[in-house]
Image 1 (cartoon, rainbow, N blue to C red):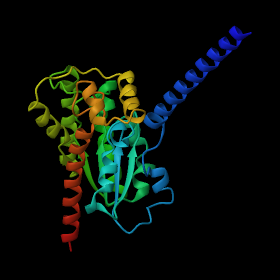
Image 2 (cartoon, rainbow, N blue to C red; image 1 turned 180 degrees about the vertical axis):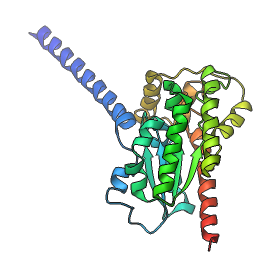
Image 3 (spheres, one colour; image 1 turned 90 degrees about the vertical axis):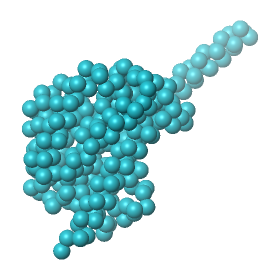
Length: 278
């Protein structure tokens, strides 16, 4: 009888541990991949332009903008004293390509009637092998639609490197997409934010390079360290031999700070220009 009781207790304990592990895994999965960003268009712009009196800024993009995996640079802008009163709408969506963003321009950008829009899209196009000309068509259509339907000032952000090995094949491919970003900004008279250039300068001044090796497992483990163990995104990055990315794609605290700084400079400059106009 005692032996049977002991076996039952072991089984119950094991089942409890398994359920706890599954619960923890599910929590990390939800926080990282499934939950919406802070103040998404579906909430902020459901009834049209947000009701606050300050400028509306829409940050449009994919997971690097959504900020649930890696540093939330849009959230950091929201907390800056100089932008108090601004309405920051996070239109980042995990896994999006330029075609995906093109398909939701009206609902997630135009519907908000913004004064300013940042666009950071294309990393998934590079990773998925989307032809450069198709990327060009999508990016142009995104800018043209915003320009046609709103009076917003638009800034196109160049794409950060994929991983920290600047000589990796994927970063050679990335250059063609970034050339499209810069050319599109010039042709459409959008502003250009040199994210790639700032990241590249930083990495060239550093020592070793960790080969590009993104995987879902790498991303999930980084998120687990952050959400379950309370480690910073910088600590998760260091565990993978990286500095600016937690998993070769998504931003560490240090990488996020670079994007925040560049975006803040553009927002401040745009606001000053608008104020000085008659």
